[in-house]
Amino acid sequence: MNGVFLSTDNGLNWSQLNDGLPGGITIYALYLYNNYVYAGASVNGVYRRPIIELPVTLNQRIFMQGSYNPVTDAMVSDTVSVYLRNAASPYEVLDFVSAVVDSSGYASFQFSNAVNDVDYYIQLEHRNSLETWSNMPQQFSGNSLNYDFTTDASQAFGNNMIQVNASPVRFGIYSGDTDQDGTIDASDLSMIDNDATAFCKRLRSD
Image (cartoon, rainbow, N blue to C red):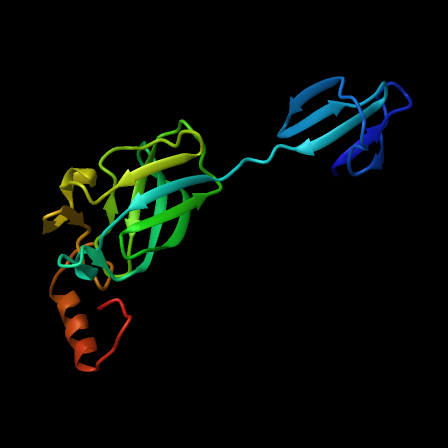
């Protein structure tokens, strides 16, 4: 329950007066406790509101190998999922967001459970690409983080990207893992061949 509370017995019992402070009220004291801020608004009145954490934003650039056209330096826009993982083993998932990556490779991902000044691995997932992680844990600062996977293979853990353009130099995450088993092999090629024969579009095998 939020609002202004009044005590008439020196703080033993409290009753709610309203859900907000009226105009012209002076705050005499502030106190933070258990994710709430308490404001002393008069001799007996206390105003309580929850502390709301602002989301943090990951501004990221990604190219997918199979969707990228080196002639136009652009790709087919598509959805990518980003997982923020703990920087220490077993690297548990701490937050997850999906967003549309535009034709220039840019996308913004807003996370509600991540905070500033904490190390996170960035994990990328796309419907027919190899899972790819950032080369090192990254931190949000001022509620934002910029990370560009396209500049060099070393931006990915284990240099796990492929060069998709020489001028300008661009790198992309590997395409072809249509069954999402972590490898690109004959089973993926079979899915691609079957869907191509059936003239299917916008599937994992695209």
